[in-house]
Image (cartoon, rainbow, N blue to C red):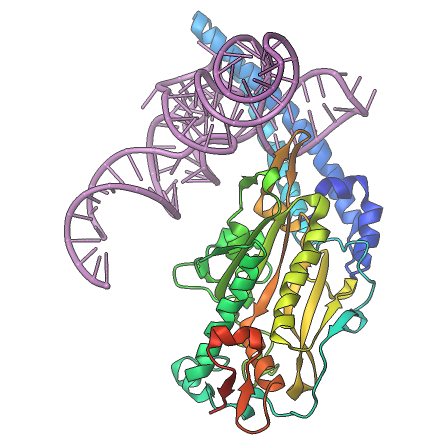
Length: 415
RNA sequence: GGAGAGUUGGCUGAGUGGUCGAAAGCGCCUCCCUGCUAAGGAGGUAACUGGGCAACUGGUUCGAGGGUUCGAAUCCCUCACUCUCCGCCA
């Protein structure tokens, strides 16, 4: 959510910035609503102040044993007038609120301008691509059982068997160790979250159809970002302790409504997948520096796994709703002959903090913190990348040396 | 599932109809004392929000939402959550 004062004071600036991400903000609507608000609010508050004074006079008369009849009549009139104006004001305030909730975050000045995905900028590429293998992960290994998953649950689930299940476990530990070695505190968290938590991070109310909801009005988390961010909801954090760095491994659940027919094969897009999330609550003055660091922390995993990848900066038109700057990390997927997203690292500035009410105090007053997060990494997609990039062409997959101590072997037999 | 207790400021915790945005303590800030540190002393310190160039000043908020009342942290109703005991299960 944007700061309404910014809209009052600098509407033009906001409008121009949002235009870059092709969001048209309705200036006339906002300004006429805010104008009405101002008039009504001043009226209501003056009436309320009058009433408060009259009420305390009433108390004095009463305790002095004097008559209160005529005063009560005056108060009753005042109350009628107040109620009328107040309900008008409420309607206006609701309209302003819902207007604000629909506005995405303002892109940072440094974000390249562009319309869509095609205008994203490749920042760097790493590792070299070996194009000899073109088989996909399902063709390479029989350790992913889609039929069993269908029997157990349905489409977009999978069953991992034997050493592949073990490899996933190894990756999770490996990634968590990477995070904690950079000062992220590890958390074990609920995999379900309540409504307020999802509003705090911005999934609700707008993206309800993307979530799985339980009978008890809880939602399965679509990412650990939800519980990790909400650890700090309605909290004052200590300025000296910023940035606070936290991490967690959780399964993630996504309904994938609206992506029918997209990435239907294999582990690419599942209702349930494992992910390690990196999250920082930062000081507003250096959140961009922290984003660079978080991005580097995520990239380091791919470096250690010796997988080819590129870092892409999203252009203004491709930026997520809550983000002011995002780098995607894309790993090379041989069977698709292209890079695919394996992590998305974003700075949300104070956009989430405002919704979730994450603040700190110092001499100057109270301020919203900034939140940044990114995957480090999506485990399912890492498995695909390892299988497809490291396939020896016959019967095994090479395990990168830094992962060997976690997995317990230098190769994985494909069947 | 049954019975009971609770939810108050950054934190702990008083407060049963007006003098309460709220005692006290902790924390934090400023100043004094002190060679330094510790201890001690004085004062200040909730959040959100409106109007105003400003000085300043108004409104809202005691888990959430309704109600009673001229007036609600305080009384009534509904809901959420937390805790204790019993039962059940691991």
